[in-house]
Image (cartoon, rainbow, N blue to C red):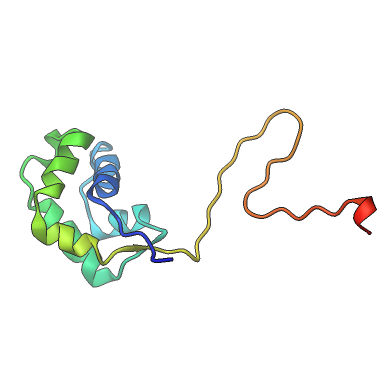
Length: 114
């Protein structure tokens, strides 16, 4: 199966999360947010630089930011090279009550199977 490429929608969520905390978009905070995606430092820096060229970046909503990013053809081409790292599997679960809370495959052996 071909790994998924990051989309403008996913990227806008990442960027929005960074700038809503009044932080400037930098290579370091960008790379922290895109863990789980295969992206080299050169491409990451180009993405950050391209996004930082958007004037009044902090004034956009997440949806508005998505539209703005989708209009940038150069950025969209770069996003096609950023693939989901399929070797990384992170599962966050909250469980209350009875029963199992299983992430991934579960193998069950019953006494009657022995």
